Image (cartoon, rainbow, N blue to C red):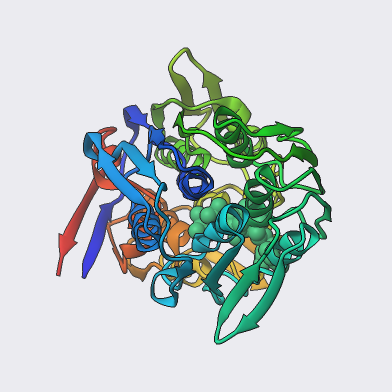
Length: 421
Ligand SMILES: CC(=O)N[C@H]1[C@@H](OP(=O)(O)OP(=O)(O)OC[C@H]2O[C@@H](n3ccc(=O)[nH]c3=O)[C@H](O)[C@@H]2O)O[C@H](CO)[C@@H](O)[C@@H]1O
Ligand SMILES: C=C(OP(=O)(O)O)C(=O)O
């Protein structure tokens, strides 16, 4: 099993290219199931989650070809001959549930394994199911699978989400494009990945208004055509690498970065003493002084501070002057990086959904273990700020969401390597 070794670093300088968003690509790929014509995605990230989604779509009969070293994904779903998303694939990745809406909308039936809980929380899919029911789907849960049917096809309906779930909004949005009549999604998620999905669906001929706001209206059409769509920049990869110069000093430009994707995050960086400027090619980040100031952070749905950057922000705040409080409001168990950071000398107290972080002068390198995707990268960032060597094990989590992490950080002067034990 591979580990990553990081050594405490001085200032970083240079550029880091930011990939297309994992979380956009994972919802854009199932959109192929809505059409018999080809859908091609450009600017795709090279990640294990993308390979898992490829495997899932292929298991349903879709043709999925990776081109240009993985940056282009060419898909065709003209012959969907299996409507069951098997547990063995779904259990590897929760985003697999996103094939449910499109398959049901196109062919009137789908069987998808329930994804089950995961390390960061229980993560039920009740909101996905309620939304599809509001569009006329009949659902039966048995043997660990959702058996969904809509014999006469889905029909437009009104969906009032109790919570602005990203995945449930995506599933409902895709399903509604082929439903008969008008669907209104109230309290819809507003994440940039939803806007990107709507943009792609519109290019395929869907009629969608209001994406990026809390109310999305979809006028169903009879069929969707093919399209070529560039995947939006990964705002979480962007935010993660913005923290590298914030932690080590120096100045780094994140190529492809856009302020509008990370506005709430930038507000907190500014309060912590980090400058971010938009350039023609991306975002430049530099720390204003020698020290980071403590800031309080509350995770919220977009446009709030993203939960997917909470662990990385905690790594920064471990060496800030003063005490910060991080409140995690999206997932009930997303502080698993805290005990590992404590092993590196951080002062963190976790009480339920709150973590109190009191800055220390310097972290110390230690062997630590990654527990999930964002936790693993937070330990790498902490390692950049630590004295000595940090060895992060279980890095397969990292491969789900960060392509070429070692090369990208080395490119700006970080001391990092991947080793196979
Ligand atoms: C592949 C992908 O895009 N993943 C992202 C997506 O996950 P995902 O789409 O799973 O996140 P949701 O917005 O659905 O989940 C947010 C909260 O709602 C709860 N919930 C969700 C659905 C449901 O049917 N019932 C329910 O109770 C979840 O347990 C969680 O506590 O958005 C999250 C929140 O920004 C991000 O952290 C993930 O990186
Ligand atoms: C939680 C995440 O992903 P997923 O929803 O795929 O588990 C993430 O990207 O941080």
